Length: 106
Image (cartoon, rainbow, N blue to C red):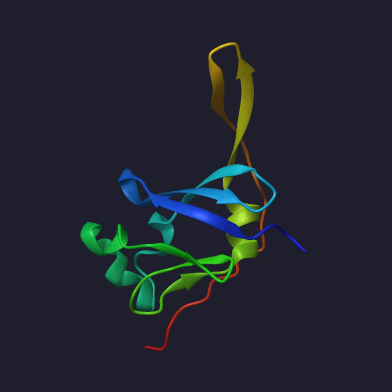
């Protein structure tokens, strides 16, 4: 089983910064979803920013959600480097995921 979402923060350009339960960090790009069914509402940046971690996935108030496996497999992982003055995150390769989406009813 893939790790689940512990924490999520909405970023600019319809991306999510995600902390997973295995302590990995990733960036997930939601822009490709914005023209599909229930995900169209996410085009509203205020609404997009209302994302929350829920039951290991990410979800919005009107029941749009994204499968935790998709989030983990398709996110760009961030590498953590230890420095004398703290940790630093760098981008790494994008995962190759299954592309499974979940959304509320239309």
